[in-house]
Amino acid sequence: MPYCAVRSTFQALTVLAVTLLAVPACDFFRELESVPEAGDDESGDGTDSYGGDIGDMAVGETEGEPCDVLDEYCSDQDTLHACDYETGEMVTYPCASWCAEGSLYNFTCTPTEDFRHACWCVNPGDIKLDTCAQLEACVIECGGEPDSPCTGECFTRTDPQTMRLLGTLYSCADRACDELCVLSPYECGSCLLAARAGLYGDCGVEREVCDADQNDEPSWP
Image (tube, rainbow, N blue to C red; front, side):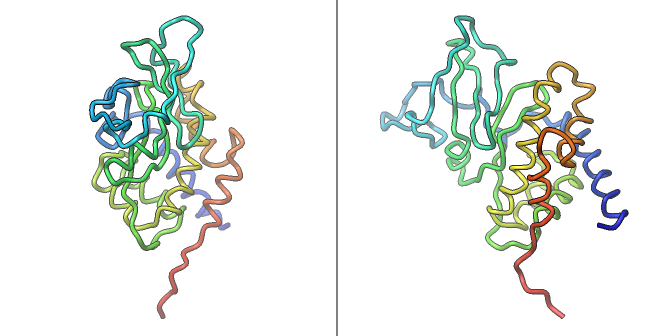
C-alpha cells in the first residue's frame, strides 16, 4: 500500500476518533429511554413498539444492586445490554429488531458520549457503489454523526453486506476501548484510532477484511 494511502487512513481515523466523542444521542440511536420497559406489551401481541419480540429480550443480573449507566455494554455488533432505570435491572435487546421497526438496518451497537449504549440504525442502498473502505472514508468526511444527512447519504451508496463489514470493525474497536473510554475519556480517541487501524484490541482481521473489500460493479471505459 502506498505511503500516502496509509497516511490518509490514519488522518481519517484521527478525525473519527475525535468526532465520535462529540456524537449526541439522536433518532438513529435506539436507546433504553426510547423503548418501552422490559415486559411491557401495549399492543398485546407479544411485540415491543420497536418491532422486537418480547421473547428476544432477556433480563440480566447486577448482583443485587440496581444497575446504572456504567453497567451498559454491547456484547457484540447486534446485542445491546442496557439498564432499565425504573426496575434497576439490565435488559438485553436485539438491535436488528429495533432498527427493523423503522425499516432500517443495524450498523452496529455502540457507546455514546454519555457512556450509554445504543443501536446505530442506517438505511443502506440496494446497489454497491462504495467499498467498505470508501464507506468508512465517507462517514469520516461527514463527521461521523449518525443523524447527519451527509452520513446517511454515505450508507445509501453501498449495500447492507458492505455496511455490515464496516460495522464489524467499528464494533470490535468500540468493545476493545469501551472500558478505557469510561475510565479515561481523554485516552478514548487514541484507543479507537489504534483499534480501527487494526493495531489494538485484536481488530486486525476486521481491518483487513474491510480493506480487502472490492466493488463488484463493472468499471466503465
